[in-house]
Image 1 (tube, rainbow, N blue to C red):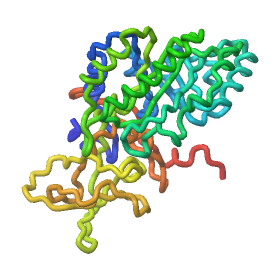
Image 2 (image 1 turned 120 degrees about the horizontal axis):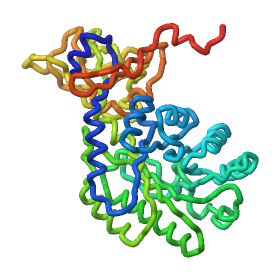
Image 3 (image 1 turned 135 degrees about the horizontal axis):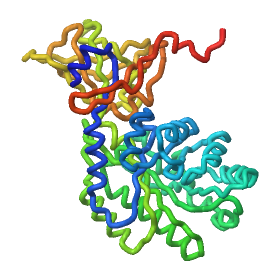
Image 4 (image 1 turned 60 degrees about the vertical axis):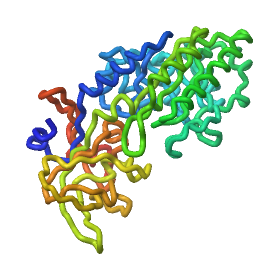
Length: 395
């Protein structure tokens, strides 16, 4: 399919295989978890309306981190009762919008948030459900830049800083949930279980004191297989999770994001030029970190394939992008078949945090996005025009 798409559409473009997304959904739903749980898609991974709507069709809710993501989730058809909002620094509009939309839960990550939630809910004569995101001080043993549960991280609140007695006395805000999320691309299932146990223990302790905690939000963070990373052992994860949930009767929310969409997506790009620089062979592509910033941002080595290259000889290339930044490299010293100008490369696992983290840096139009299934496809985001780059600007 991708080869056919290159004959129709100008690169770079993103494309997503719907069957892979469906397979991920079906896999998570097949794990025989013996308790009441729901899946909520973490919208920040890929906020395209068509992608969000596909999850809605599969009875999956949405986790958002801004008023913009909340708006898009509702626009895509997700019922507000199936939406939760996280976010380490939600602004006043984020909170007010979430309150008026009567979403499932606002997970606070700062004690001060509750004052606005209580006062605005009173002003609107509403009862707002909220939860508390806990920082458990657990090292998820993942990339530092995607660790969210260690002491010193900006996410969540340390338990000893929370006055639960005060939260229980609110009149217009209902403490409904506890939440935890310790990072992304987690390969050690024991770290996830450790975080769940910490949340369950806190919930049980509060329950013994008369609190009515209904929901525990266990977050996401499930790894996907790629260079340097293995898959999470879901069999052992599910077995251990069933054990710790055996005598607990909470509603559980999981918030997978990257796990659900990353492997479905590719960034398709073309070789513009090939040059020598000292001992280096540099292939300059028509994409850049404007379209895929994760390699530069997280220092990872993305998976790459050459489309339809029959060369038996391989040499090492540095794959570089087109923006004016020295750090704009996808890979260095990667061994590939001998490349020619005009050939297509495919970066894999870009279904998450490819388009969602893209930018118009250097005034580069954001690319086309395509969703396909078997031999059928449709455009789910048109490419920016040059005029689009000037929208909202006043001269």
